[in-house]
Image (tube, rainbow, N blue to C red):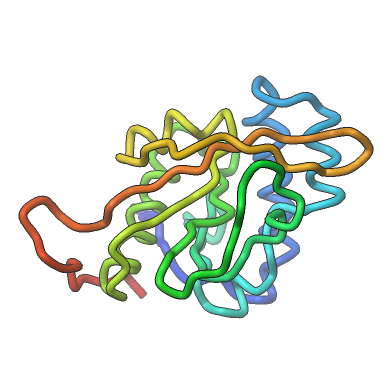
Length: 189
């Protein structure tokens, strides 16, 4: 019986990752955003900054070589930060920002996103990060809340031509209850 594997993304997979991300956004976000918002965001901003893969901080979930989901983290500013309205994004090497978490629509609601987030959080804890932040789409906000992320504020990303996309900045403490420091575990290879 095959098992879902979580591993680091490879640069040769960037085109396949973008295709999965765009399909995910178009299908899973369609009840939260208009087609124009989604298409403009994809065309002008994109779903992922390539440096996530180059920095080796981007993970994929796969089953029998089929990409089921992806996500990662960084301390760099996201590509959309320069277009954020009502939200100040500043680089902070001590703050981990979870980025570009997407699930293949055919694998939605099967625990793939939860597994990716678990692997990311485990990695962050093992690298002494005390908190993680993310910018949630309207359709993913409830999912992140179920994982313990709390909203900090709502902001708009101006994608051009009078189109904007609403996101919610969220944060979670990575410290375990009763713990003074990070959990020194690591993600599977």
